[in-house]
Length: 199
Figure (tube, rainbow, N blue to C red):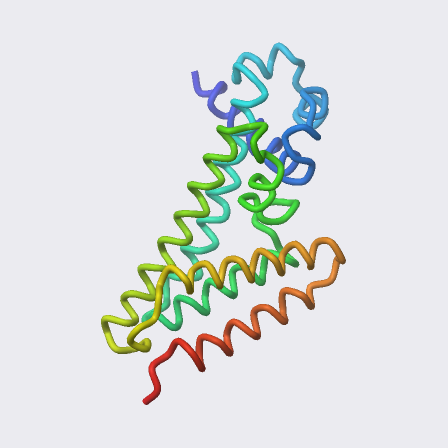
């Protein structure tokens, strides 16, 4: 009775890096069969379709991402520390991604586009979760007096995520982590000089 869930979890864990590196269309069921050692019938015993497996693989990848953020944010005590911790998590993606292939949200958003609406919607939800966390953190910093009055939490969330995701693309494209390091250094400077309230 316990074998099926274990096998399903194993399939998902092995499929997640494939989808994250190659995209939905770049992964065939034959690729998954080769990675898992299962025959097609064995895969379809656990998943009705490739899309269902891809969604499960994305959920697995997001859990790995979320775990990184939880670990980094667990010890933060101020809004500033929380924003800097987010930068640190994203910077780590370049050399140590939570799932092989880089950021699963960014990869899935680019890969799915309009062709796979279920994947696109789930990627959007995952990005919104991080945006919401940044917005709430900034608002808490404003309310406590730690951050400047008049800041727009939505704008700061967009700025941070757009810069970090752009740096991820450049770092991956050129296989050069300096793009991410520069982005993180600039955003840290921005937080210290334009977000934190002057004493």
